[in-house]
Amino acid sequence: MNIQDQKHLNLQSDKSTGSLSNQDDDVTFIKESSVKNLLNWTDCVDAMESALVAISNTSQKSDSEPFSSQTPRTFTFAGNKGVLLTMPGYASNYTLNSVTGSDKKHSTLSCKLVTSFSGNSQLNPAIPGILGTILLFNSDTGKLKAIVDGTEITAWRTAAVSVVATKYLYCDMNLKNLDGNIVGKELAIVGCGTQGRIHALAMLNYFPNVFIKVKLWNRSLNRAEKLKKELNALFPEIIIVIADSSILCVAGADCVVTATNSSQPLFELKDLKENVHINAIGAGTNHHSELAMDIYQSSSVYIESYIGLETELKGIKEYVNGEVGEIVAGKKFLHKIENSKNVTVFQSMGNAIEDGVMANMIYQKFMKN
Ligand SMILES: NC(=O)C1=CN([C@@H]2O[C@H](COP(=O)(O)OP(=O)(O)OC[C@H]3O[C@@H](n4cnc5c(N)ncnc54)[C@H](O)[C@@H]3O)[C@@H](O)[C@H]2O)C=CC1
Ligand SMILES: O=C([O-])C1=[NH+]CCC1
Image (cartoon, rainbow, N blue to C red; front, side, top):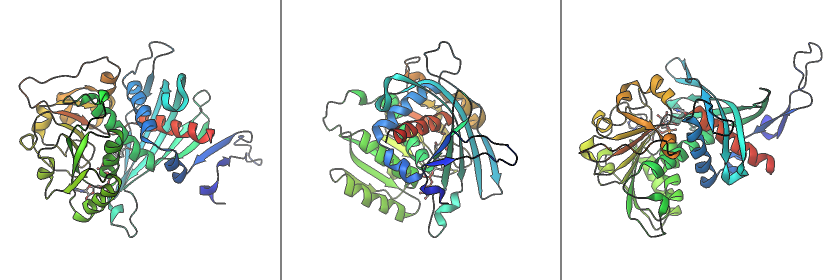
């Protein structure tokens, strides 16, 4: 039986033991190629905006407000080769406007299992370093209802969350009220692996007419060259250049994405121009090792969830100004640092609620088809 080719997995009861009685219900399996076919930036960004608002409301005050609960994710190390993360979460009363309309409220109980094996890119053939599976449960009964491939979802949701952060935190330009004119900004992509590539695609697709130039840097040149070729074909009107260093990549940039495994800072505050927005994605020794400490010290810093702050972002705790969802929901205004370069940082980590909301969005679209 080829599990990949099945739409539904019927979990039959074991009649000899009677241990499992699921005959009437199917568990839907959504494989990676089906997930890919159902992804687009409008739906993903819309879903992640809802997820971020739910993340920021952790105490249920009414039956209609978006709300979420989650525990810190766990890390199980497989020697020094890689790690398995478990990411459980519950999100309630959130909407998927572009998929099911603004009247329908969703509740999702989920758990993502995701592995991170940085050596996978050296395999022949290479496989992604980050591989995920998302379990979706019926949130009234707790019964498993779907198994959704989570590899592509992890890539897209991370970039979609950065798009939301850029939309709300980037102070130099009101990206929400673009009038179709070319804005003439520069985008820097530091690290051209899976995340660097998907971030470039997300930014250029979701913010058309904003960027006239993209600068790429990667530790090994071939990955930067491969991405340059892809972007040239997709966006012939945009100038794509490869920078010789991470510092030269961010010099003069308006918006920066860092997506490497670096444990050392890739640039400092002095390397940046004023009013820059940074989406810091990668994780080296920890999730805040790509940027020099002087950037965190003098920037407005936002994260996805305070839960992650306590467990994984202790080193920058004192510099964090809030959660992105608090800004999206209008609960907080963007914090300005006096006499600073006016830099904003979105320190990404990834969050279980984002995965659950994305998996449900894919599930809703899959069941409609
Ligand atoms: N914030 C989030 O939600 C997520 C974060 N990540 C993290 O983002 C990072 C990138 O992930 P992927 O793009 O999937 O991995 P990838 O393996 O596809 O790309 C990693 C890139 O980092 C570069 N790199 C590796 N070590 C480096 C170093 N010491 N200095 C400079 N560059 C280096 C490689 O050349 C490669 O281009 C990882 O650290 C991963 O854990 C991944 C998924 C979600
Ligand atoms: O949120 C996520 O899925 C991950 N964050 C770092 C590695 C995978």
